[in-house]
Image 1 (cartoon, rainbow, N blue to C red):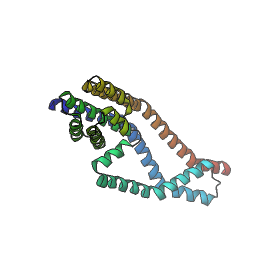
Image 2: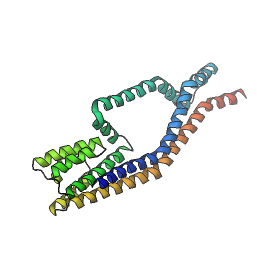
Image 3: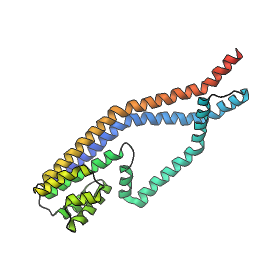
Amino acid sequence: MVAEWLENRRAARQNWRAVIAALSYPLLTAALAATAFLVFAFMCTGTFKQMYEEFGLKLPALTSHFLWLCELSVNFLPATVGVLIVAAIAMRLFGGRVGWSWLMTNLPLVGTNWHWTGVAEMLRCLSLLVQRRVPLAESLRLTADGIGDAYVAQQCRLLADFVEQGTSLTMALVRLRTLPLSIVPLVRWGEQRDLLQEALRSAAEMIEGRLSVRTDALVQVLPPIIFLLVGGMIGSGIIAVFLPLISLIQGLS
C-alpha cells in the first residue's frame, strides 16, 4: 500500500511537470517579448515623443495609441506588479497552503490542470484505503493528510464531515460542488454495487485522461497563439514608431 501511495504521489508530480513543460517555451517567449516592450517603454518612448513634438508631426492613430500604451506601462506597471506581489505573499502567509492552492486552482490556463492533478491523486489514494476496508470517513481524512494539494485536502475533510453525518459520498460530492461533478455518476455506481474502490480508480483514470488531453491541447494551440501575438505586437510597434518618420521624410523630399 505504501508503494502504491508513493507511486500516486510520483504520478501527480509527473502530471504537473508535464503541464509546466508544455507551458514553459511559449511563456518564456511571451516574457521575453514583454521585457523588450518594457525596456523600450522606459528608455525610448520619451525620446521619440520629444522628437515628434519638436518636428510638429501629426501622429497617426496607431502611433498615438502605442505611445499612450507605453506611458501607461511606465506609470502604472510598477504599482500593479507591487500590488500583485504583495497580494500573493499575503495569500501565502495568511491563507497558508490551502489559500495558495486555491489561488493556483483559479489561475487562467494552468488552474484547471493543477486542480485535476490534485483530484486524480485524491481519488487514487482514497481507492487504496477503501479497498482495504478502512471506514470511508477515516479514509477521506487519511487521504487529506497524504496528498499534496492542500485545497483538495480541505475538500476531503469536508466530505468526511458529510459522511459522518450519514450522507453518502455521492450526495456529499453534489452538496460540496468544489470537485468535478463528472465523477459523481461513477461514485454512485460504485456505492450502489459495493465497488467503490473500482469506481474511484476509474474516476481517477477519467480525470487523468482529461488532464492529458488538456495538456496536449495546450502544447498544440498555445505556442502558435503566443507567437502570433508576439509577432503582431512587434510588427505594430515598429510600424507605429517609424510611420511618422516616414511621413516626415516624404514631406522633406
